[in-house]
Image (cartoon, rainbow, N blue to C red; front, side, top):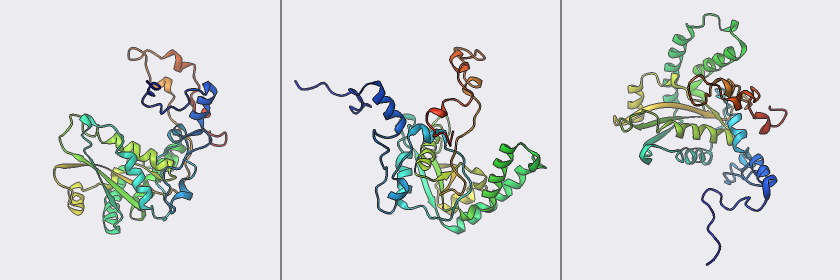
Length: 270
């Protein structure tokens, strides 16, 4: 008769190793004994030879908006898109489409739009330097990207079929998040930066995007000059209710405000 088939999703890993083995597997990354490279092309292997584990990636994926001038190799970009398209979509329609933009002329046009949008937005904050540090740093990084958008190594324009789903973007943005997490895992940085979309109809003409597709967002990507690090957020207990709105979740009330980052990040990061 042969042995019973392994359950899907487990791939036979850790079934006979006990709890300690399973804990080690979850903490150390892709496999026991260390993380496994996702991309083995000789040109990129030095960049990706030690992949962080899933929770390390989640806890350290910041919106990064300052980039070095180093180009992003096609092998690395392919890995980002290959991760993006693994996202779920309504009816498994997979209606996402992506355009890689490196053309400086297009990026310069987008920079003009970003600067105009930034100037309108900055009117809400007449004295940025007096704001709390985290807000001040965030706004200054937005301003920096708006002023230097044409220098970004690569911009990804994310599109999707218009009118296909009842929730616009609901079947597109999971792919975007996959791409940002994959970028973090490969040492890149990025963020959604729709200030640069500006005149979408002009952008549509510049890139030849058909009317049947909607432009959802712009993703500037590159190797960051800022560093990755722990992401600070409101604690779980402040945003999750149990059974009904406003009813606190007792389990979350007993957890530290910073969550469980310390379980997954080295002491110097956490």
